[in-house]
Length: 168
Image 1 (cartoon, rainbow, N blue to C red):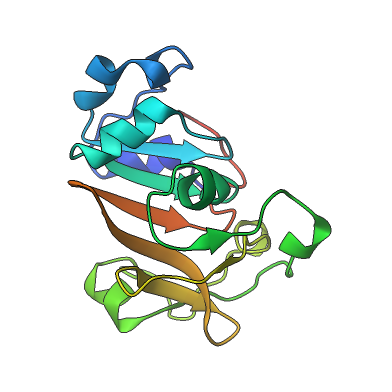
Image 2: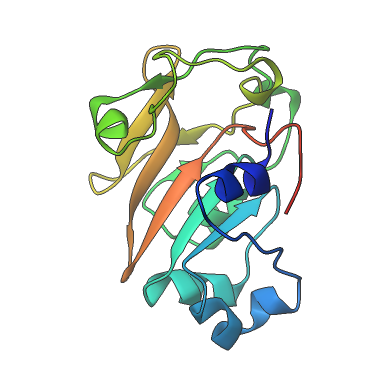
């Protein structure tokens, strides 16, 4: 399956890879439309970027930073990786009505499964009333959530969507 760069380019966007030093440069970050972090922790500067109007998308283990350390949305994520995050290859994700309204299911079956891209899930819990659940697994276990953080927006994909191609 395609990675982030391929998908973004197909949609007419110009993806760039943000280096570690750029991720701590508030001036650089403020010029970005959307920032995606995958499988790594954020920085205090990324938190500032979001809270002052930036848009952030996180994938899989970046869920831990966004909810626990960055405190960008009201909720908790499991701390650290263990084998309990493996649920099963091809686990279906079901978009909620809010997720469908946001366009997340465009072109996909509902429920959606993608072999190795829907097998690991970062558990989230204790979501605040201001957090919107956009997709679930196994009935009502949240998988994709969103909400406002300061003047910015956050979309958390608590599954391993980009499990194949890591193109920037």
